[in-house]
Length: 145
Image 1: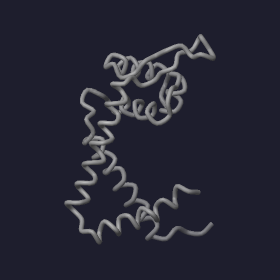
Image 2: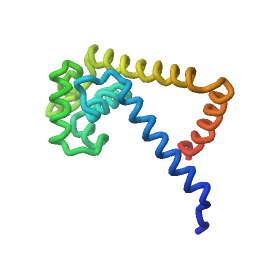
Image 3: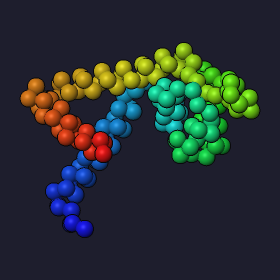
């Protein structure tokens, strides 16, 4: 096997560190007062993927079913999810977002988008922003394999 170059190792580390920091910062920006990162993640998953069972959510989030039950109970308490019988399997319940859950999720997404756009506008020149877009295009190739 070919040896990995020092520049590839450094680039991998730097990309991972920067994306982790950016992800944390974006989480801070979102209006998630009163919600844990796990609860926020489940809201996002339901918003992206639609209705799901508690067991499917637990598997997707890589947590124990008991932990997912706790997360869903908290979201239910906040009025952000609705549980209803699965039309194909009456023993199972499906979880969906309520209107309040969709508004909360959209508000969080909009807050993150606005913060990031403002930060890019304020901290970078137009030329630097074009360079960021170009670099992201290169990084996109990592996800298309």
